[in-house]
Length: 240
Image 1 (cartoon, rainbow, N blue to C red):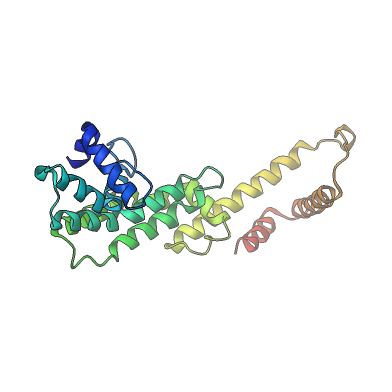
Image 2: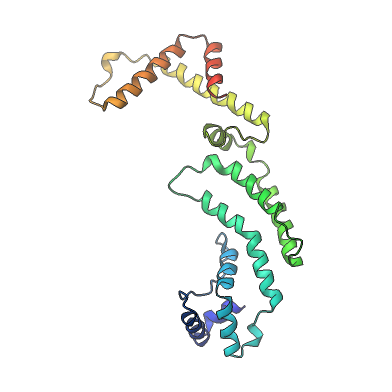
């Protein structure tokens, strides 16, 4: 309601700008909540709290008492920000464009739920406590079966940071066997192609690439000389 007031009233917005400048702050507008935008509610509350003093001064100066927030209202805003903050941090992390995010989905979701559950809200506003419980219930209901996703579990296993942190060891073992089977199948498939060496186009490559490829080919040829069961066991040892 108050956000809309500053958006609609040019006079109110000018007052708010004036008080922010006087306080030596960068001028910032109150943010409107957008239902289709992730974390919009958190951003709205955070910005409102950030310029709380200037908002109170502006409303008081304009005699807009109907728009004023009580001490309890401000307390509720702060409580809600504390509860929603972990969601905002996780959303930013999982939305990264310059790094792989598939492997962090399971561990970061588990950490998010745990973080909100462990938040001490005994002295919070009752409405904030209800928000906490509703949020925990919604997160558990929505993300309870992430470890059933083969994509996420494989990504997690192949990431050295998280491969040892499966909550369910059965899921870890099943994922490990699945990856071993994938690698074994790929090696056998390549072996069946039997491309003649003279048909392979040669080109100049940096020495480091040549050395890596040479070692990789040696390892591949070694696996091909082993029986299927032995190959699987070797791969199993790699993923231990």
